[in-house]
Length: 517
Image 1 (tube, helix red, strand yellow):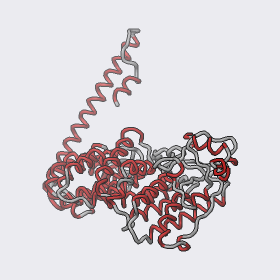
Image 2: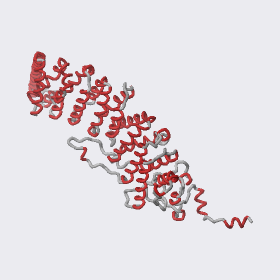
Image 3: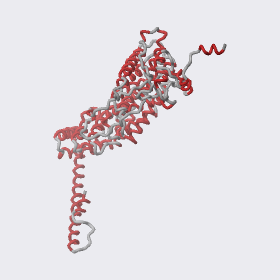
Image 4: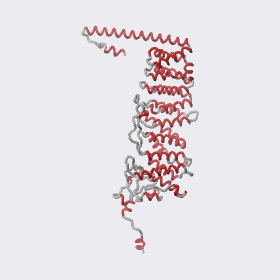
């Protein structure tokens, strides 16, 4: 009786049993379309199949699926990569299950460096577009299972090694960085839709932040931040928007996001000076700083001092200076007492030989001074105008011109006028030297205008400072004459000793000229 029952059962080949022992299911991809979940494939909760997690049979045809020439990201490609039904073609109760199946279908990552699998790539592109539309029009909260599959699909497609190497972030004098050809990711055809899906998912009112934070966790955020080093500007633009939305929606992650960005800045400033996404990260911080409540927390002030101000140090400041200047100005506008800290920080990192960078510093200084109040101005005006005096005498006309433009701002001019007794003695020598000798006509004219402002305002003080400058100049001339006389005597002495064939420690001319500088 038992033999009769067993004889009626369908027989399977021995290969099926053997391979199941190794944790492999031989179902084709069409089986996944029929509702098979990744957990049914013997892969555990993650649903990710690793190429190295099981032995691959010699005959892939026999077992019903194959591994194509793709970037696996933990996924295998089935022999039948087929499109699933559209959402409009299934009953409402089945849409959630179909959504999960489409997410699983999109976990397959194709290699766009090879012109193969064109049909499969188009199927995936259309499926991704359907997913974007589904998330946008979702009418119910996403379930825990759906959230897990969403994050799995996003991770499979986005989190990857970035190549080629990040570009050198070195500003060459006279080189316009905007003219550099950015590197475009060949997989952008799919990546763009995945980013759009992620953006719509985060922004959707049906995404419960309390439930989603289990999957959009710190590890997810770190991997997202790593992508900011992408050379593709389109990708960085999406990342900027998405990270800002995540910061707004997941309040629990806000301190972690700020800390993670802080760490990227530290590595960039003090180690590599190479990163493609600093401008986007600083721009995000501009919006975050704008929303800081008053009074400012101590941690925010520490962030200003330890991260934002040192960002003025790298040579590639031009790539992100506009965004950085906005952040710095936001801090001063929110707490005017920080003006002294900011100005002294700028002076600490003030460029010595880079004129284009000096112009950027002067532009930022103008914005900071416009938000500076008299008490804070008085704290830093002496070192500040010592530096401005150096800029006034710069042989680079744009530096000198930009420094003179400070007097065109009413608020800054008022601060200077109120403290003219301290400031005029510092900058008058620079003004006089420009008026006499500067090669650029525009700088010469602006100098005379500033000089006239001080003279009309307080003639007595101006004459007193001018007299002091002339006395100091006379003393410097006397010192210079004595120095020349001393060297001349040394040269004569050296010549006498040389003519007498005596040992001479001071070479004729060479040592004299070298030491005089």
